[in-house]
Image 1 (cartoon, rainbow, N blue to C red):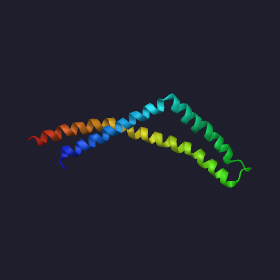
Image 2 (image 1 turned 180 degrees about the vertical axis):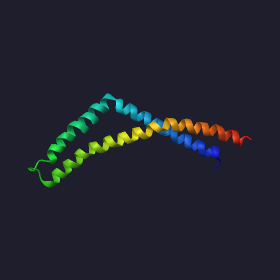
Image 3 (image 1 turned 90 degrees about the vertical axis):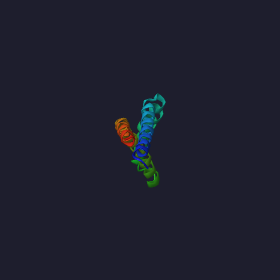
Image 4 (image 1 turned 120 degrees about the vertical axis):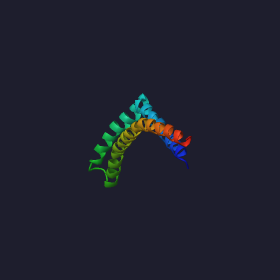
Length: 110
């Protein structure tokens, strides 16, 4: 595979990553997502699960399940943060690959 072909593949991957990043930003700013997932689940429901996890009147298995559900919010928020940080890198990556592609095409035409 030529350098140009490799760079085209790399550019395509970066552009797809940029589209995913933009979708993530739209999702995070969507009022329904914020209300149902971030507030409803990550805040309200998980607070209820934490209370249940510490309730000695529940059997150990139910407390364990409640603790695991409460932890799910943290995992989701961490996943979203990581995706956002990684996604922000795609803009620079696209620009860099496009510049390398111009140089590779010039060298190929020599």
